[in-house]
Image (cartoon, rainbow over all chains, first blue to last red; front, side):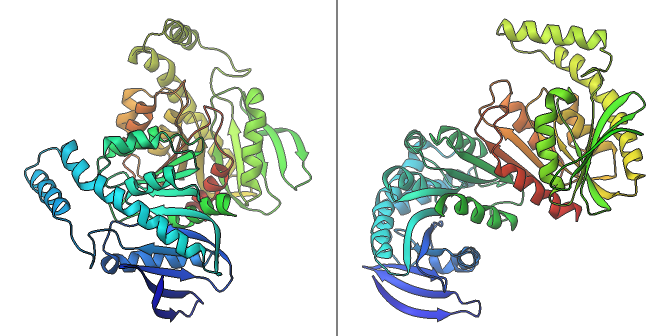
Length: 241
Length: 241
């Protein structure tokens, strides 16, 4: 893990870009150390996502958390996979034709992403927890919900997860969800036109966790209300402190 | 409105029983006055509900709210209606036989209750808002969700409602729900065996409010997690302050 830039904001938040091998990432840390860590998931494209990611991160850093994110495989400046590009084109064709998006397309699009991204998040976790300014426990917050679900199953260092519904979920991931036992808060935008609401509700139903909460709101895909930021911090306060 | 008993708790909360005509009720007020009012709905039977109602009320009074509740028609010591008793018996038979509860039974059970209870809550509101220690704005918090829905439609003094799913909802009330425009927080116990989850989701979908939030949790019908009490207070803080 190599830090490549560093910026300190007026509110004391330190933002550092890093690379982990050829994967770019960003780490936000508070003045108080060591801080428990929240991994911030996103749909890919760090530069495009930066405004929303940094706002979310700094909101959590203000509550004493360190927040880190890495670029997803095939997104931003990372090399594209021909198979993923083909699946994405098939998805676009189906959506434009008003056809249902078949399981086959979802599997080809999402499963290789999950298979590649999850070990990368785990490698990032190794590197981040080796920093003196970061301690456990660790939370995961954000989308892609299939990545967060797999991480919650395979990574015992993650103690709680705030998962954003709103992306396609392969059926095999719904089955994996039954193995999740950590506390969950699932965010669903009820009127998100690009999202299959029933699929999100089925996934929420499948999670094996005894403590799981669903928060559904209006406002469209990117219109998560501001108070969910506070609710998310309180969720992590209950489980990471 | 006649106060019939009075008790001051160590935390400064004043609890007074009252009657409004022949309807019994309870009012909890904080030391700081005047306080905005939360009407506390419940499934009927004030004495049986008292432990949960008073815990909820005192949690809100600690945040500076006045809380009031009245007995529902045909519940507690109030006179039974033969038609409601018959509908309740039909409901019991259907449930025991493992049959679906028909719309006819739900309508006969719930609609007369809504028709009678809502004007009573409005009369209570008249009396309560005439007290110097109570001011607007007003919120409604609790079940029966059909009562809360009708109140939200017809009573302009109610500015926000926290509605507990978990009781039968006539189809005509789902239609009325489209007229609701005030901010809503709907609580749903996901694994409530006595509750039709899909009906609750359909009702949430129907509400016309631009700001509506659904919180679904595990824990069975009476197992609403403690943190929802805090979330409820914060919901009212956003809309009644």
